[in-house]
Amino acid sequence: MNTNGKSNVISTEQLEMISSENIAPESSEIKPKKQRKTPTNLNKVEDVRLDLDAGSARAKFVVDGWCGNYPTMFKEVVGELPSGISGCFSIGTKNYAVGQVANSLNGNLVEAFKDNKIKFLHIWLIGALSTHPDLLADIANRRKYKGKPARLKITLRLLSLSSSKRNDISKILGELKSFTCEGCEFQLEVTNSDYLFPEGYGSALEAVKKVADGTREFNVLDLGGGTLTFSTYQVGKRPKAVEQTSGSGNGMKAVIERLSIALARVDRGGVQYRKESLESALRNSKPLGDGKHSVKYRHGQESLEIGDTVAHALSEWVAESPIVETLLAKVSQALLNGTPVFACGGGFAISAVAGWIEKYVTRDIEAPQFTILPSPQDINLTGLKYLDSSSHN
Image (cartoon, rainbow, N blue to C red):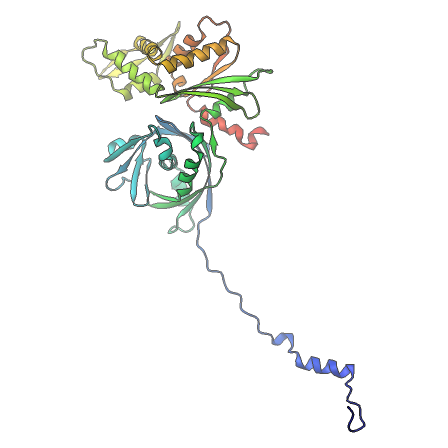
């Protein structure tokens, strides 16, 4: 509406001038200050590779390439832990000692019988880490923040006959968060989920590299501390077991038990044979030729030759253990069929035992393909190196 005859229309130029006057210059805007992040002061994560075989007699492990073992037993220690002793650690308010050191401390002894191999898997795992002579001390010293926990990322490979208890194993590992060793707290996490492998799998990986072209299957005989196991595998890049039969309670501990009984029948003037010393004597046995072996037992200032008694004890071990007789018969039948058999386990690291078993299972078989794998006491774990991608390149 025009009241004075003049137009009220505002030009485009005027609108632009008004708009520019109402807009604050960019320099006048108040920018919020950047908030500094509170330093977390966390120590860097240390990667640790652990291969573990917690058997009923000994826990064997490879930590970052270092092989070790200890008797599979522990004590929840009454009182404080000694310092500078291998295999001692704390979880929460409870103190533990694994392996042989447990014999010198007060507390209730727990061994890896029956379900204890799985139930106390967290103890055997930390026992392996704390038994390494340098691992934890080096990690503790490398911490930037000495007052803060060290942090471990564990890549685990676990050998077990209890693959059916995968959920139990996963739960135990998932609940394991931290422990303390020599005054340093260690936080840990098992980062991989593909950690479970059949017992003796490292031997299978080693054996498959030794079979002749055209071989479709092979067998592994594993004589461990507590168990004798016979397995059949398909040949492949990663062999798969098609049969695995275990004689629990019929490993080297049963052989030594049978040996102590056999020695008790020999009149040697009241000599008492300690099982630990018998095990040491067996480990140091030496071949004499013609299938005979020298096994010397030290008693006071005298060395007693017990090689012949060892042979008698092994005969009784087979005759009085139906499962042992059955498994060794399977070995002989496989050899008779021309199927290769590879032997491993601590029992085959003992010349007197290995020689006797080889002679037993190959008797009257022409050109038997029976092979004792190198370092048979360790190969179940060290053979897992073939799973690493670098080993296939």
